[in-house]
Image 1: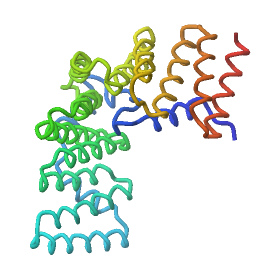
Image 2: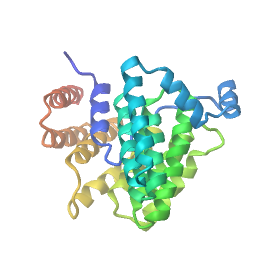
Image 3: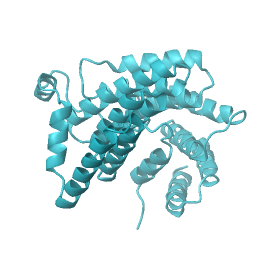
Image 4: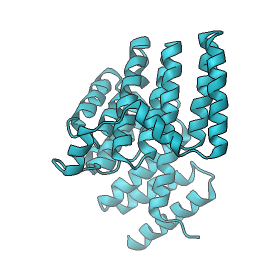
Length: 295
């Protein structure tokens, strides 16, 4: 089966999500001033409504397992906060396994409330972030993004020196702007720009800004130096190979868009050195051949 270019991009971006939250962005859910936006803002979701709706979608076996966990939670709560948190983690994991990361985030947040640890809040934020990405419903997306931002802010209070919490909060503000017209994309972008001043050689900050230029504004002139800076940082710091694969592929696309076919082919050559996945290799070779023919 021939793999399309879109599938290649999806795979490369998926394996490059090293913060759990930075990924290709879709267009806004609503047009500014549209009826969907007005309806969304006038009737925000509540946690109770989310849980009732989600529970109503469970099958008999899932309901039985969840009821059993709820019983264990009640028992654990009489013993210690740590025991109750352990059961809540199982509940979060169950919802995640049922592909409802929004509800998985709710239970991860309950763990964080009990334990009040930065890592627990970060897990809650990341889970909500996945919920945002997976959901196709605008109200679910708004709920997940708002919860993710609040969770990362709690993590920042407990671990202010951990830049990842600040990066993830900034990215989620950009995501929230897709579904909440009261939130401007520049809110998150400015946060990332400020982080770039504080941490000029941070891979996550640079790749987040590069992705914004590449995926959102299509400003390849700005994307290229950002992606190249990640490669430069690689010379002095550890950078995951999946990130390098994404960066090289993105640079290839940037140069192809600028009609610099030679450079585009060169970066695809680097991609071939960074993966053993046969499907990705086949797709990259196919694109390389197409570029050579057009050159």
